[in-house]
Image 1: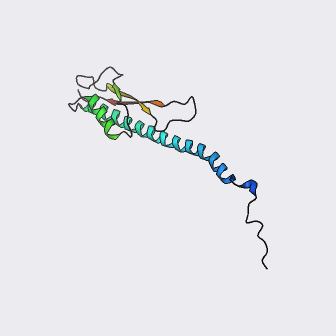
Image 2: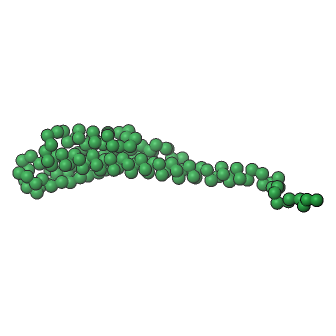
Length: 143
């Protein structure tokens, strides 16, 4: 004769407890996962903007013979992850090219872009987009 297995069956009150616990944990888990993806996309766009501004500043310093703003925009568009906006490129310093500049004078290029998140936040009050800023400064070394 076999002994009854009392521990193998759950009482009726515990049915569905695992599904309920999973449902309660799933929402915060999805929010964390969405936050990681949003941060990764924003970080990738920050790196793309840094690179684009640096390439534009370098082109302006060596006088590559091209439109510096177009170089920056093209560089950003080619490397930005899920880019939805075109960066705004400005020259906050006194010069925009090293041609006819003094030796050692600095050339600064700045870029700004607004990026939207891929996954909207489920909590109220959190932004749907962020502003990214980058600057590059090079020194003019020829006369």
